[in-house]
Length: 283
Image (cartoon, rainbow, N blue to C red; front, side, top):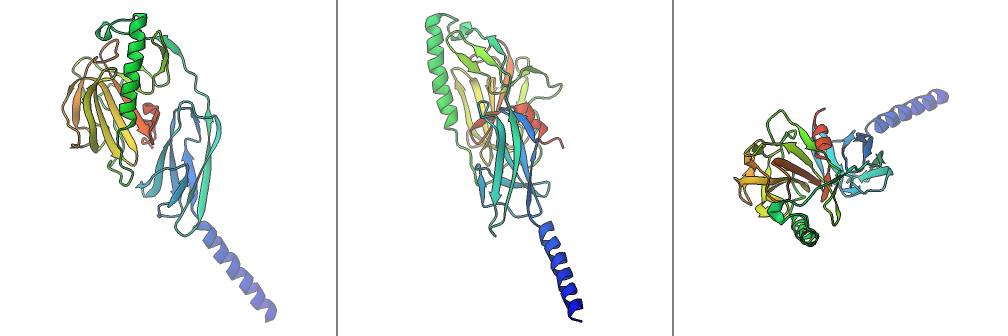
């Protein structure tokens, strides 16, 4: 009888231990191999609770019934294995990792257009000064971190066919300095309708010297979409826009060699590859 009780106790402990292990949270990162400047999607299984802490700092939301977060790698981020860890209110922890490979950055000449004074040496320095001002303004754009404003998968900002004329990651030689292209250019003849990629609040609707007509939409949880070189702007700061809502028309305002739409997507203040961002929501 004593041996039977010991065996039964061991069985109960084994079963209960297996059940507990099955409910422990686990963290997965997709894709597991990226290039500098690519985003990843972090998903937690085994719990419906959102983490209370994370390293690095990321913001979780429920997506496809699972706690999920977006993380953007910087185009100059250190290559190699990057680990993400989270902690829950009950003290449980989970972690996962992914690999960042170096990005090849082709270089091309980008002369300063006549609309900005032409490509003289003196004007090159002036354009860099204006670029610094524009970038400082963009860096200060507010994005709320307490709430997700978007409601479904993200969509392209123009109607099909979607053709990329200049991808993310190019180094552009302005003559005085190399400028990294931290967005993607879509083919868009003058006056092409430009739509919000998802629901959000307009934070900026104005014209910059370098970026031209610009609209910035805050999608919440430190996620921004930026639409640049617009010829017309149809929204105002503070306005709530829906996914697919018209925000402006494409053009060639600012530092531009021709009509197109430049789209930047920022996660946590980092400009990532928009095309890779869209691909995260296709599964």
